[in-house]
Amino acid sequence: NEPEREALLHTLGEVYRSGYPLDWAALYPVGRCVSVPGYAWQRQRYWLDGATTLRGLPTASAQVASASAAHAPEVFADWLYQITWQALETTTPTPTDKPGCWLLLADTEGVAEGLKARLEAQGETCILVLPYKTSRAPLMPAYQIDLSKPECFHRFVNDIFESITLPCRGIVHLWSLNTPHLPHDMTAASEVIYEQGCGSVLALVQALVQSGVQELPRLCLVTRGAQQVSAADDTLAVTSAPLIGLRRTIAIEHPELRCTSIDLDGTKAPQQSDRCLPHCGPMMLRQKLHCEAMCVTGHG
Image (cartoon, rainbow, N blue to C red; front, side):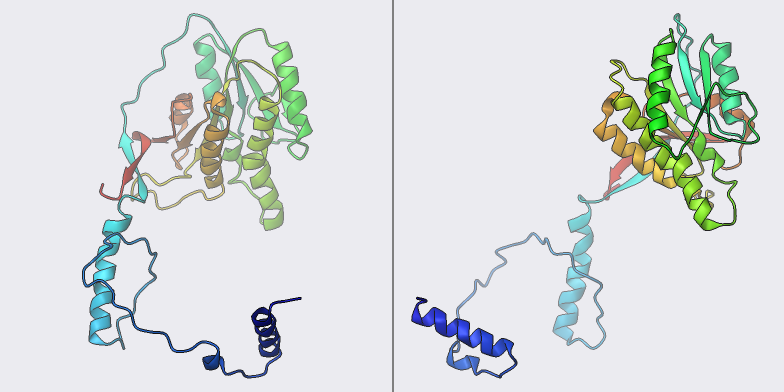
């Protein structure tokens, strides 16, 4: 039932697929030459050219390749952005008239301890939360959560918001500061990094969003040495870096959490614990530098 030409082409295709050579010139005669415009009718390039090797090319081709490479920065200048850091003046938060409650997912390095003292001096109430079976805890926690069970975060969130009487001003996640103390077993280390980093943050966000609470508290993710501000920051904590990207995703998908990231100096200066209060936007707190991230175009 196939038309004659369609049946013939189908048969030729099957023969060619079986490995038999065919004379395609009989089917497709030589095309005719057409004239093209002699002027540059299209001046905007959209091609992502790879690296060009000029060695071995004819002179004309080398000239074209060089011109194309020189044009690339102009094309991509408005497409790409780079992060720069702008120094800010350190300020002291103004105490509020009405006290509130803070949930501190505490580390074992003393940062949460200093933050708790600072908040309580301002009349705030702090509730400490530690991973289950945490050793070397500087303070007695009110809650412990099994990080391997996401359902524990749902129970924790429900219990917290049913029991507290003060407005919850924020949740400060400091568990990622524990990850430098890892076992040599990389399999076990990867589990600890995930559970005390992105895994616990993801489970916490899901529990908060599904809790039905009308006014959700601000979520603050604290890391140490996860971003490079200056050339002197040559050692980065790659285990905490995924939290920076996760914060951006949370800010887009759940703006009601007003998720903020604060990156501390890798030197573990004790006075930094007093400056872990949530700010607006991604922050970097260095021992002598307080700055925020900005995106600028390729033009600078």
